[in-house]
Length: 274
Image 1 (cartoon, one colour):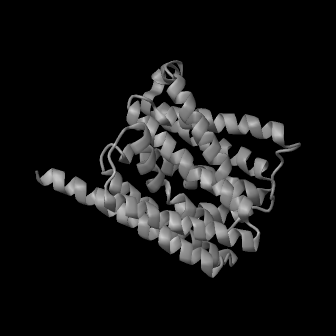
Image 2 (image 1 turned 180 degrees about the vertical axis):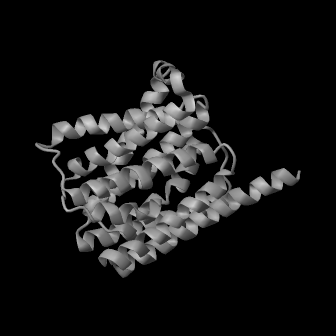
C-alpha cells in the first residue's frame, strides 16, 4: 500500500500541496482516532494528557515528514524520493552513534559510504535536470524518520500513535493558513482518502504494532520494497521516468542499505543462537 503513495500524490488534479496535505491528513486523523478509540476506548483522553516534550518533539518530526513527502513528490520524480528515503537506515546508524553512543564497525562504515555515494550522484543529477529543490526536501524525510526512531529508542514509553495524530492535526491547521481554499474535486477527495488512510494511516499503525513483534532488520527490508515498487507504479501508470543517473545513484543507495540491513539481520540471528 505504501508504495502507491508517490503515484497517488502525483495523480491529484490540484497541484496545491496545502490542499492535498489538508485532506490527506484529515483522513489520516480520522483513521488514527478510530484506531485509538477501539484500542484505548475511554482512556484516550488520558493519553493526550500524558503527552510530554518527547511526544511534542516526535509530533514536530512527523509534521515535517508529512509535509516533506507531498512537497518532494510534487517537485521531483517518485524514484528520487523513494531512493533518498531509504537512507533512513543509514542516518539511523549515524544518529545512534552520535546520540546513543553505539559503536560502528568497518563494514557499517563502508555501507554508509556506498549509500552516500548514491545520494551525491542523485543530487549531482538534480543540478542538471533542475529538480534540486524536490530532492533537498526529500532529503529531510530520512532525517526526520531517523530522529523519531532515536527518540523512541531513548524514551520507549512515548506513544508514537498519539504523536502521529497531533502531528496530523498540526499540519491541517497550518495548511488552513497557507491556502485560500480547501475546496477539492470528487476525483481528488477519493485520492486524499486513499492517501490518508491506505497509504499513510494504516501502514503507520501496522508499523507501530509490528515493531513489537518482528526485528528491525525485517521491518527495514519490508520498507525497502517501497524504493523498488514506488518508481515501478509511477512508470507504469503516469510514465514518470527518472534519468539514468538517478537509477545509478539509487543502485548505490540500495546496495549500501541492503548491506547494512544484512549486517543487522546477521547480528540478530547470531545473538539468538548464543
